[in-house]
Amino acid sequence: METIRHPLLESTERGLYCPIGDFYIDPRRPVERAVVTHAHTDHARWGCKQYLSAKEGEHLLRMRMSPDAQFDFLPYGKQVTHHGVRVSFHPAGHILGSAQVRLEYRGQIAVVAGDYKLGPDPTCESWEPVPCDLFVTESTFALPVYRWQDQDEIFASINRWWRRSADEGKCCLLYGYAVGKSQRLLAGLEPSIGPIYTHGAVEKGVQAYRASGVHLPMTTYVGEVKQKADFAGAMVVAVPSAHGTPWMRRFGNVSAAMASGWMMIRGTRRRRAADRGFVLSDHVDWTTTLKAIELCNPQQVWVHHGYSAILARYLNSIGRTAIALDQTGRRDDSEDDEGKDSVQEATE
Image 1 (cartoon, one colour):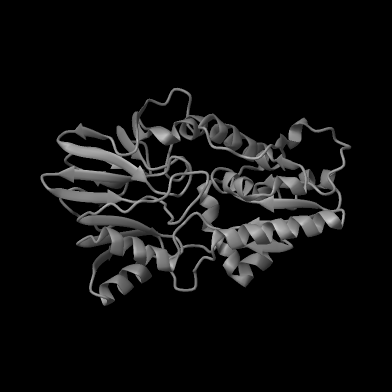
Image 2 (cartoon, helix red, strand yellow; image 1 turned 180 degrees about the vertical axis):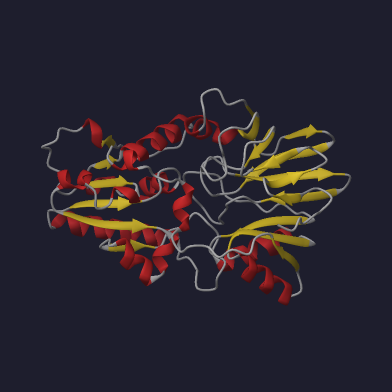
């Protein structure tokens, strides 16, 4: 793997490394000091000696990490200096507590965006542009085919589907990733339609969100309901790995739907075998990726985690300086990596 260097950052086998500050950002392997952008397991990994992250994500990170993990937390916008490098966190809009990491040293500024999205989300603070010399962006959905609809239209469609299914005496199963997506889905549901239930893996995230002060509609954990309960007209928010398992049988006549950016591709919808697919993602699409880069206006862009080569090539073609940190293609269902749901979770 070729090492890409900037005065503030290097790409290494363990992930992005700040040599002056001697710390890694979202390291792929255990390290001495890790700066973490958010609580998804492919960014907040176990085994590091010391972690630094945004204060707003504390409840989620403590839920996800080992009880003896050593954390320091810093509120959005506050700075800490480590070996002369000023470090601060700024909202990324991806999930609760997600942050862009801003590094500053002798007039040079680098920003690592982590996973991020633009636009409002009632469950987390909105992404904000941070001017910089180097901007490190994800590219999960960095293809022109990925362009998101307004989320109000998506939630109106979800609630119409729920109301129609309830009129037909069906129970709705709505699948979203356990941490972040599921709580955003709950916040967009219309509680007057019927009762709302949660899968066990989703419920853990719900508790962390509520402990952080995020308002969500009233829900009931499915595990606390009697086996012979009637779920007709109800909405159950669950993880994708629960689909097709014996766990579904208790709900009787169901209509199932998946909420993900990958639902934009017909083949993915078909492979998921769900009745409906709602295109709702917590990542930037093609248009908002370009908008974010324009607003931050960096001299150089590093691209990783997704369609990196394609985005870097396009940015270079329009006059920006961009480098792809990895050349591997992304599977069209890899958003699952936000929060892999174990078989055990699927049966909770």
